[in-house]
Length: 139
Image 1 (cartoon, rainbow, N blue to C red):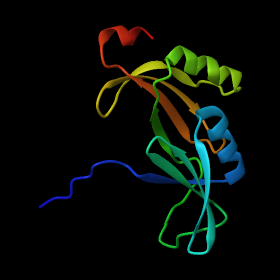
Image 2 (cartoon, rainbow, N blue to C red; image 1 turned 90 degrees about the vertical axis):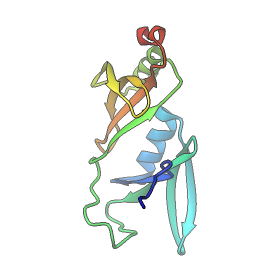
Image 3 (cartoon, rainbow, N blue to C red; image 1 turned 135 degrees about the vertical axis):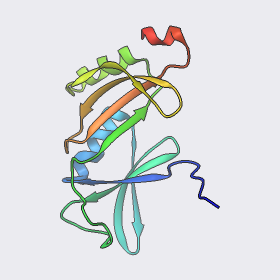
């Protein structure tokens, strides 16, 4: 018998400043900030689609089982239906420099066209369009 993973529910990001991350991800990526209480402790998350990022501030350890929580160590790929040209234009409006792209990449299900940039902690963020047919490759 083996375990069959169906999907990702949440991922924990260690950040230097929760307020800065909440602001950046809401403004630039359209994520929804959430506040919740778990075990009597106030927590924060960013919701998008049917997933979320839980946020842990680096100087406030919430889980003693975490061994190497480090801001800026993540490399994330996020899918969007927003056309890539619009993504690039919006990043410019938000003063977020694109460090690479658009470039083709291999996704979990489809080929991707992607751009890369950093969040306030230095995490590498890849925003991608899934290429489902040849005409989409020209975006």
